[in-house]
Image 1 (cartoon, rainbow, N blue to C red):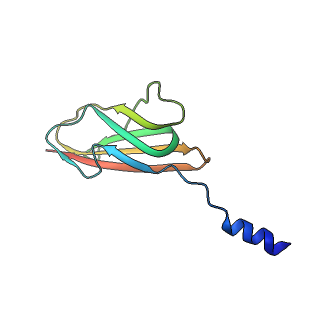
Image 2: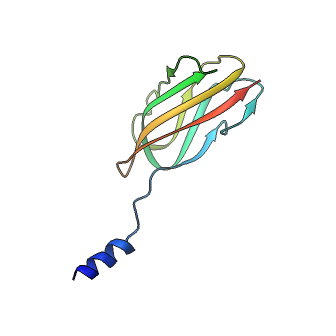
Length: 110
């Protein structure tokens, strides 16, 4: 009996986490001007709980998700043009399977 339970547990697939499929701009992109928005697209539903933007390692600013407060696979977040330099967007969210997810993307404006 115990062996049957073990085989069932090993054979059952793990629940997937909501991974980032694409970002706009792409992570590591070099742009001529700052974009008006950042787009995060996930493989599965995710609820963003916090998104921060920093510029040239300066003070972090929290980005407003607006009406995008539920589980979704695509989020568009307006950002402020801070001129040339390095932009870092850090996000945190809750995936549909209940796991806390976090990641970041960076891009340069020259």
